Image 1 (cartoon, rainbow, N blue to C red):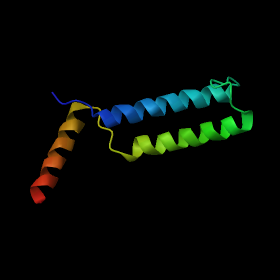
Image 2 (image 1 turned 30 degrees about the horizontal axis):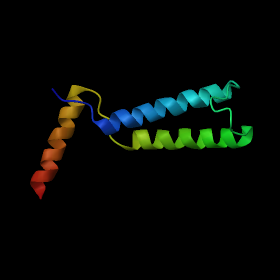
Image 3 (image 1 turned 90 degrees about the horizontal axis):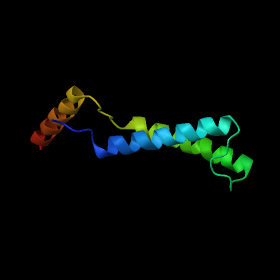
Length: 81
């Protein structure tokens, strides 16, 4: 059975954490109370944008079919060399 890659899981977790953090900030909750409001909001927005780009720039294969397709693609690429 194929497994979802560790990179895919890490990117997805980072994305979820930053999205939850962004939503909390939008509703006036400050998960990190030691930050200044404007600085915190800018950092949170930048982290959310960065995590979103990072998470979806890579190929995130969750289904068995997609993982098998990734393995086939990798084997085709390695056989070219």
